[in-house]
Length: 106
Image 1: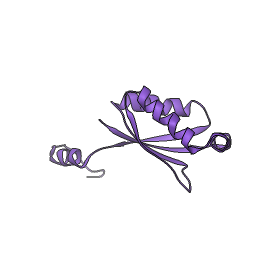
Image 2: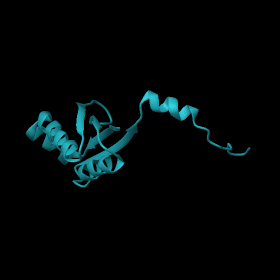
Image 3: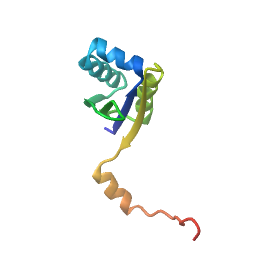
Image 4: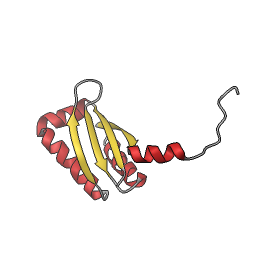
């Protein structure tokens, strides 16, 4: 199943929600969202620094991944970026695929 990394940043009201209900409650919400989209949450980690959360999910396709991101972003309390992850084997296959390309200025 394709894997997606969500990188989230809370606004101040989102942080207040985490303080009120705890980190485990946030992870449970994302676990349910991934399941509702036909997949599963693999990891959910809070982080120090610019980003607040890193979450890895396995989801059926890009449509399901977008649905999860839209649900999170629609609240206005968090902003999520979605990174599509690919396996080393997929990179191996891609490296063997012929693509015609001309570099800029050539």
